[in-house]
Amino acid sequence: MTTSLIVPGLNGSGPEHWQSWLETLIANGVRVDQDDWTKPDIEIWAGRVQDEAERASEPVFMIAHSFGCLAAVEVASRRADLVAGLMLVAPADPDCFDIGAETSADPLPAPAVVVASTNDPWMSYGGAEHWSAVWDAELIDIGAAGHINVASGFGVWPRGYDIFDALRERAARGKQIADGLLHHRRARHSLAI
Picture 1: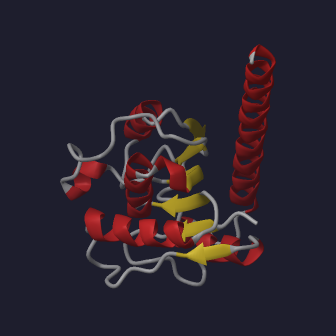
Picture 2: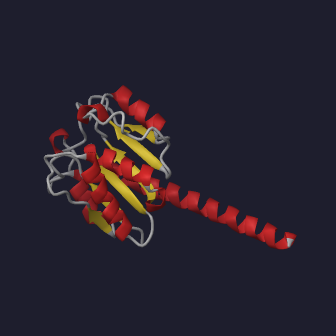
């Protein structure tokens, strides 16, 4: 079964956060822990995400929030082979952490969604539009939802589960298509020999 990494942002995700709720619903869910949740360091945080992804037996899904989204994107840009899909909820603006120039400006190597709010204090909606286009991620606008965290009323979040489920289905369809093309190419190659 595919592992799903829960990748919290600054200060972690407490027991009332939607990530903690979602973690209880997902089989094979693993929370990525950081030594210091108050010091967002992209290299250290991405290293932890990558370590957890490397422990899995196959590519992982990443369910990230805020600064955790930037760490997940960093891992995906370094190691495409580790990633099955990314759900990036309320990504933080890289410029808030002086890493805008370092943040990957390449399309993500796996199916991805950016879930954005029109009044997120950590990323303008225009910024979310920009980064979702850069990363070739589907943009899901959930309206005026703040930072999509506990303070904004996001504890139990059924729509979040539905978004994640749709991402998994999209990734599975893409894998089936890729496997079918590979099988077709191998069959054509063996006929040519």
